[in-house]
Image (tube, rainbow, N blue to C red; front, top):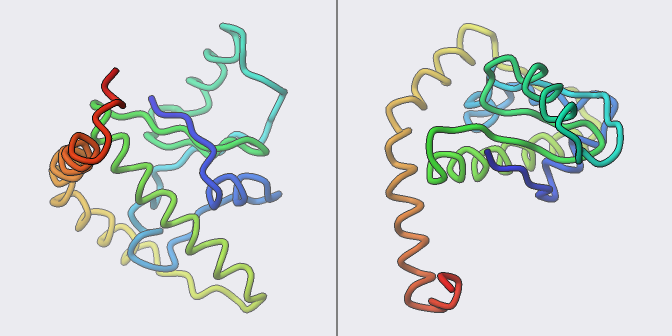
Amino acid sequence: LLHLHPPYATALAGLADPTILPIDQNTARFYDRVAYDLNFGGLGDVVEEGQRIAQVMQGKPVMMMGNHGVMVAAASVAYAFEEMYYLEIACRTMVLALSTGQPLSIISDKIARKTLLGWEKFLPVGQYHFAQLKELLDRDDPSYRD
């Protein structure tokens, strides 16, 4: 699990409706894969809150945590990072599109699902993306390993 407060995802999570709509290929990556928790109850520092969050996620790999941030569940840190990376891009797209005040051009369910399925062939790339970032850190500042 990765739980973060990146700026665009957190801004979207602060809206009354934080839904990530399929308006481009990056937002379509999250089509029908996001759970929404709109019941912020303060800091989640008790076991019961973790159980409640797991129930809200209902097997979906991403959760927008209303008035809080985001959570990603994945089989590896590399894949969770890749999901979070594209989630923040998708949220940036949503925030910028909403900021225009213009009506959104929402992709049809059929095309959104097709686009989501198209993303699946790129999922293994997440391992390489993460490995490359670690190589950059190793070169520039290996102290992160301490």
